[in-house]
Length: 559
Image 1 (cartoon, helix red, strand yellow):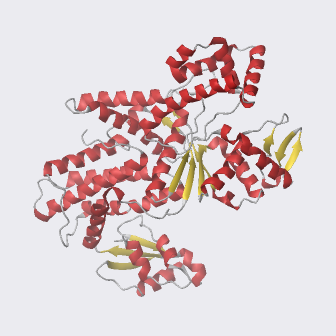
Image 2: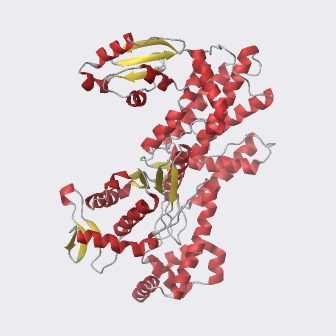
Image 3: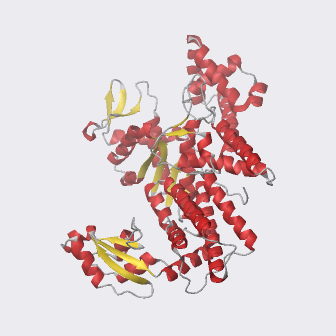
């Protein structure tokens, strides 16, 4: 049963729609006050009364019944207590019926969301800095799909720029096809590092010429470039497969080469382009923004030019309701400029463009990526987590079957969870020991909770049932109430573009289930209590699986 809907249908507030009431109903911070609460502050202007008076009037006009057992008005809030037995049965029946779809919705039906994330650079391996954009984007992709949206995952490849001329130049001077094929993307990166440390002025001139040849369609230069691209995509696919991340488009910067001119022409026709020191800009001073550089003095395009063309193409192609850019907060100014330019061009859909900014990731030793090759590769972080997970399993449960498979689920899960646990805007210091702990707020803790619940159900040989009129005790009811919030948790995460809301829900549910597990006998309980507790265990396992699936984390049956 949708209790919020039930309450909203019975409440009548003059000048306020049922949908507005429904969306305003929330869970009170103190559950002793009630199971649901309606803040009346936003109705004060419409009704021209104080929130306290509004809450009191609504309380007096609301008849309790077999569903809502008590209504109270406290400091401008209208609090509702539900019949615990009916509420509990409704939640567990819903989870049992919907299973892997529990928490899903059709709210996105007929709507398309584009998500631009990961955006790897051709001929460069993944480093730890790429982790956040990849797993945040991947989680949002799964979340919106789960809520019924058509989702287009876009890997906006970094495949345009003078660095590719440098790469070809380095390959021509020092490269060997057989060695590069064998070494893959790391061999290509070594050539790039060598160029940046050893190239002289003549080689720099050659590099610029090779880039010109790529742009002009030279056969040999483009064949080498496409070879580098294929090596990159083969390499990143292995990492994406481990992280459970997928894309629908790999249209990168080069794709928009022939799509920039119409945008430039439109800017010129609208008198938005101005010349500044030989360059072409859009002046944004009146909006307290630096000028948006569209063309350099030599006529070359820039990131903004290509992003403008990409936004126009995506709207024309996908007719999105939202287009998200999962890019580090260092690009805040860039996206403010691009979005403002599109607004000035009269693109009313510019309001639907969202920069989903995130903080930086580093390791405890402070290692970071540089052009000189001082890099922490993401694949090494993933592999190290898998290796550490395997060693922990060997120590704690050496007879466990499928140890390698479980170690990968645990290790990869730790990497993803570690990047998604805190608010996306926060910088992250990644700690191997912390993310692989069986205690505290980690994916391992949640996965272990799933394995514990699964073990209980296997030993019982059944998934329990919901006895009629069963009245849960305090520990049981805490788990039930948390389970009931999952659909709203997902909607909240979607509205805020914040996967950490799902991550923290998973930890919260795991903690409450483990308290119930310790305080309440399950397998040795009798009668209705045993049936109910097994059903509650099964509902918890299913909901945790659904939450972890959205985050891209696997669930081992045993640990």
